Length: 587
Picture 1 (cartoon, rainbow, N blue to C red):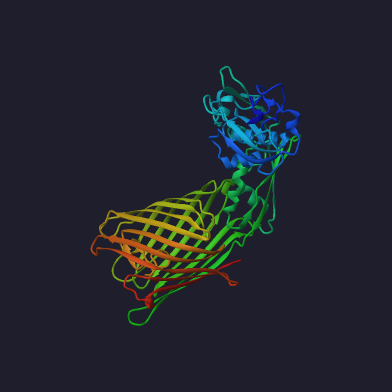
Picture 2: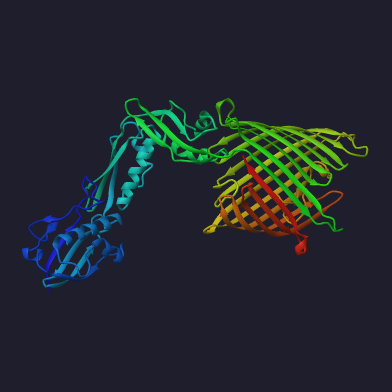
């Protein structure tokens, strides 16, 4: 027969927010009160617990309750331990959404006693009203909009903790990083109703002070500071501090960036921000050598060389030059330069020039002026305007001049520029070109729409599924589009297993599936499948879908990053594959 029982009750949470730790029970007159009614004999002796059983619980599992109770078989039967265990159970129930739960502990009046823990969750306690107090700098409506507590909703410790953090964050965004928020709970006007209030201590309003950069040896400090978006003298904003790190991590001349550290000077009303960085090798020399077997037993060698000078003299300026041999007699030479942060804004201005010679068929010369606006760490918008000249190699066709303009958008949320493990990237562009009238007095106008995207999905540890797609469409006022204006497909850059720019059309599409085994920060082994489609109208119409597949390897060596791709096209035997070997050397 049950001889002794102790009720433990977590009453109204009161002003101290007892949702987190319920108050320990105190001795009282009897079981009707929220206390302990234990005869002296029940508190001492050699009684041993033979087992613990819980009853009446709904929202919390038996094992979780027993772990919180902390008394188990073989322990001494001690009222103090039972009371502490009941307090722990009450705190667990409060965190689980039952702040008005009661717990009763009973045991047999024997030397070997079974303990029974009876739970009454009382999950019907709900919020009657919500108020904000002590707020002068920010209106109550503004603060109520960022919290989750609403009249009629159940109350939990997690709810109040989250709301307090949300209010503090809003204050930190408005220049009050030292603001403190204390939730309080009191009885409402109706049974089981609760009045919730958030008491705010605003403290002093501060402005940004100095931004202190450490770890930079080559890069000038102001070059890094301007990229953070933090401006000395402006009102402190916690969200600006939070976005500083991802903004800096996008810079190619920084290898890693630590979390910013904020030091507030109450007397001076300023907040200094310290950021530690590790610089990367910002310049890169890369080369690719390709080989495609020929039908007559003689293969064709292709290749490219690129040099990219980043962070010139520690200023963030960039220059690049490249040469590419598409095939014998078909070469491309390009140069570009970028000046960052023009007029003190995150706007880059660049120039680009390109010369293409294709056998004796034609040559083209192009030049563009580019303006790129950066929005946060992930989004870029570029507008360009340029001119071009086309010179035929033979025949009576006249040389033509034209102008062009384009707008492009780029969104990049990947976690690594060369070897991403997760994230997405999306690009889109729309261009227009107008070529001067020829002997028929008909100007040629063309427009190109291009959309591409990629997603990197982690499958298992060090394994990634990479999915990519691209589509391009060209429209012209003339039926026959000149060869040099047509869209191209094929080669190491897109449809692997085929020759460089093997296919031409007015519409192209490409889908790629690649399964990667990550071997290091810049190293991986991959199997790929490419599906490409092209079509064109006019005097020489064509349309086809091609399949390419193969394997690729990236590895880090003392010489740099070595890349090897071996691709096979439709109908190719194993020895007919296209081989591309590349080297990337950072300095």
